[in-house]
Image 1 (cartoon, helix red, strand yellow):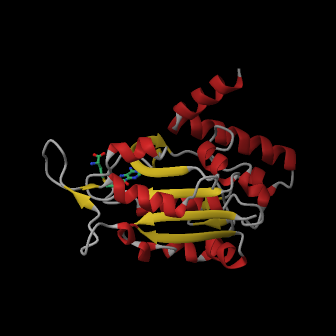
Image 2 (cartoon, protein in one colour):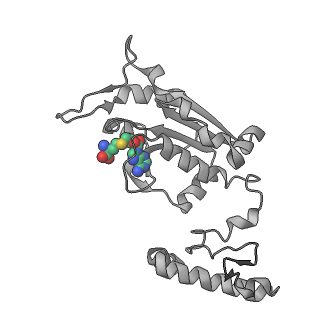
Length: 233
Ligand code: SAH
């Protein structure tokens, strides 16, 4: 059974978009995962297929209606579907590699993409939508956030990433940022590759990489380090 993604959106044309190319695109063609983009407006109200209305209490902008969204969710994810239901939202749990791993190990995801001012609070509660944020900034819609989440999840699916080992030392996998990389030419604009990397001594290479990862993490992301020590004890 392969990973199934259903995305509820007002802009289904945005999918698969970049996920139709490269690693994710080839995996999609192989059937390692599937993607359906469903038009929320198909569940809209009346002749105009209305999906939104003005905010209760008054304020500028529009809010997606709970009845319309609930219909769209129910049609895409019948009872027993088993996939987590996510809502892309700046108020959500920040997306990190641990959540990406958890999602990619499961049967797939249903993702609701908000637009305008967001969605009616009641549908979040009634349909058990887990809010997920991709960072502390405001996008104009959830679609690009969904693409980010899916890209991160799909590359972890078995067989998708060419070199499985490159997943292990990658940034965030062990509470560390990754060590620097070098390739040919050995000397470029007067800059040499660190000699240890050309020494052929695998132990020394490993030790150097570990030290560099520690150094970079301490300098740039002490928060990652702190979290690693907490989870280790
Ligand atoms: N008024 C809202 C922002 C709405 S932005 C607020 O202040 O919190 C419109 C939609 O874009 C949201 O419903 C959400 O689906 C999406 N979105 C915006 N920023 C996002 C982020 N950082 N992460 C995930 N989704 C985001």
